[in-house]
Image (tube, rainbow, N blue to C red; front, side):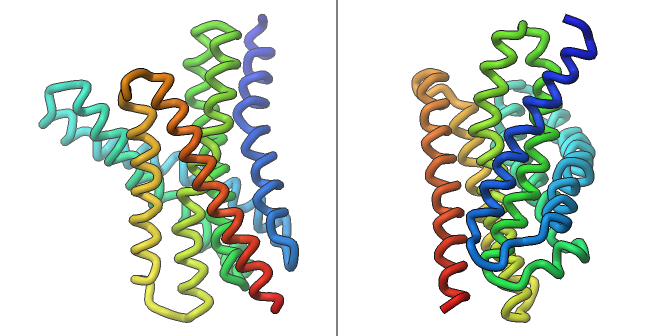
Length: 237
């Protein structure tokens, strides 16, 4: 297989599932759906600025941790469960502060939608980064691992960042203090961290953790979509 063919396959598997989810999330809203321009801007922020900022911040913050923690397993757990969720759930929802996106937040459910879209953009780039290493394991392993990430990883990022987006939307709609977002931000970190905990620990084996992580993202994305539907109907009544 040529290098060009590998990159075509990699890009398709990295970006196509998140883009399909974007359409799915956006169309969950029946009334006053978001325009595609602001949706694309939000997705691109997650895939570029948010992803790059997260890589840089995690790299910087990892330095003192790696110097103070000698055990590699403990360091990995702290980074995956603690550091990564905080940094990533900070960079992703900043997309909602972009002028074109912010103008589109006119109803409570809109923050959920844009937060999810930013998370999906981030997950696309994360898929791309992980996919490069997956290819070294062979095409079959690559396809299996990318399918797993396309489901669990993508929906996790969408669900978690949607929560912060909801808090930001409520702040805009009610013209309240920026502090209103903080509980939703910490909830997003908790959701993200718990998912990473499930996929990091053996309980008692990797398959168990994988099954539990799948169940968890199904619950969270279902909650997000049901909330969007409920708020969408309420705003029309």
